[in-house]
Length: 438
Image (cartoon, rainbow, N blue to C red; front, side):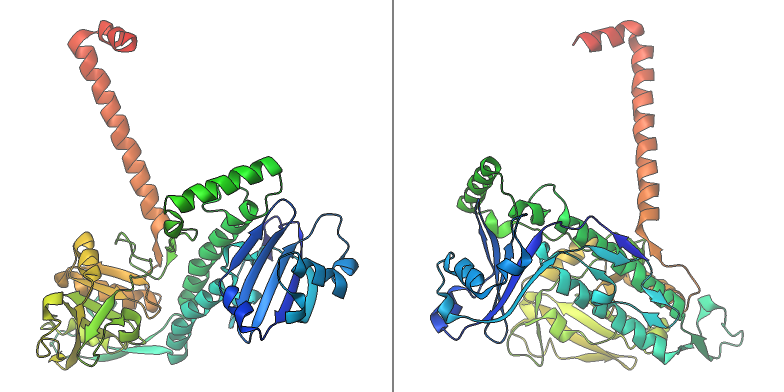
């Protein structure tokens, strides 16, 4: 079954060309939108010296005519580009569609990328969605193939021995829960981006219709608005992609900001001479990041859980440690390696201060599972393991938002009722009359 949105009911001519002219390639290396009353054209620079032209056709255009050699050459010439410098690899006309399957997995079969969804290219998120699908699924498939997690004395799962002797136990990973989290996390994001790509609303978010305007009056107003935005310096700050946050999935829904992609600051480690992006420092498994605090694993609960999760522990140091090699050397705590890194741009400091926490737990795909104080970390990690093994439900932000919304409405109603009662007791009905007259 497919979830369908109204197709962008316009035909587009796509021309894939190759050029070896260095001057032409340099002038068209960026993404270009050429738009006026008669034409709406996107020019995209692709690998292997390929230039792609996507041209919106008029409603009365005939497919057989527009793909002819002379006609396509004339279209390129009208852009001020010498068509003789281009070799045409492909000429094709097609209509953009917006579709998504309702169920992303069936037993042991998982759908992702173009097999699961398609969307118009206006927001440039088609391939990006496929990559996010793969990143979300890859680490979950790894846990599913492993089959079981070997934990030592997991108290919350109910295997705490009375004689105090640690006992190893094999706990089966819930493949269904993992695949269910993949579907929930990716379905909402793809739907969100697709709607924003095809809708007719505000151009700040809904790009497609804004770029394909043809009414001369509206077109003139749009161009003036774009010039004003560019002149005021706001063009570099426009955000057309919404912030990705899961509504439901594998995260701790008690944390505000869980289910979001973590920040990407520059950090410095003992093995790097220059700052690196955080992604290049984190491992391939789960990550625990402490800020300016040495991890306390004295109760061994963390180490019992960290090893099965293939988790890596990091300690973030303030920038003042940047020039002290001794301070950023890695250390160990009860057999667990602590990788130290310096917060070069103070971005991590800002993040931890805003969340008021000691440690954040990141999933292998760099999304936030949750964050907490050091004392509450064992409970959070055990909850993560329970979620992986299907012994507790997935996180659900909509449930929390519904509770907050209900609580907010109740509080507002109480305040309004209290104000009216107070006014009535102070002056009776005349108080209301004076307020209305004012």
